[in-house]
Length: 201
Image (cartoon, rainbow, N blue to C red; front, top):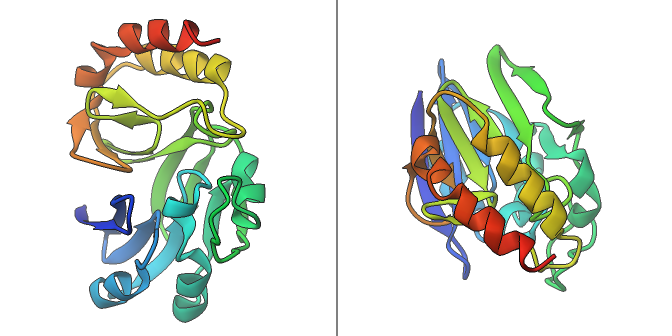
């Protein structure tokens, strides 16, 4: 598995191209991501969103049309692709497939697993490919996603962190912003973040 990464737009949102067996998956194509993606894919097969915020989905529709590939989005965030809840003029996009919960998918022979961790958004998910998590805005290096946005939930965020603490095994985490980390490293600080979130509920 090969991973290409490029921070995009004013929020420096990480866009990923993940190549497995010669096939490219595009994860979270944010602002101005189109040309970078076009320059770096050879056999694109799907666009995957971790959640619906503008800085992760901005180039969805343009890439979907240019590359003629399907778009996958968590069902709980589908509405955000039509109208940005944060007031940004995001180009609307329409998913071809709405991912439900902890759904396992096989796309062009590539097996991947969505894991639903709501809180930052209703459909906030990580995408697991082999031993790697693309965590969107759920987990960052020594930090977590905000839970004070419209449609965010502190209660759901705390539950999601408690769920993540119980997951065994280690995974390399590539987040929506910033540097990579590991699940083991983040599990060490999850109790702290759960406490911080619960103070605001």
